[in-house]
Image (cartoon, rainbow, N blue to C red):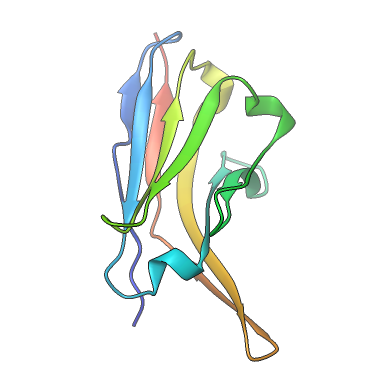
Length: 119
């Protein structure tokens, strides 16, 4: 059973910062594309940012220049640095791992961590 364990969520005021972490001991971490998705109440889950095994990053337009995704393949951890947070960033943030393997796509999700941006 693969487990992705997120941490770092919480309540922050508008303009503040948070850093989310996601770690696992159950994957060949360096082989996976890692990422973050979020889901706000009443909305579909959406991509926030991903980082490939080679370090290439993709960001949603809504967070470009505001969020930074990074990975540490020694610590098997992916991070999401979130700055200048806005109330519309309030959501449950999910860690995601994916790789192609033997003509299949392996995908795993964390349990989610709540981020609330409010005065």
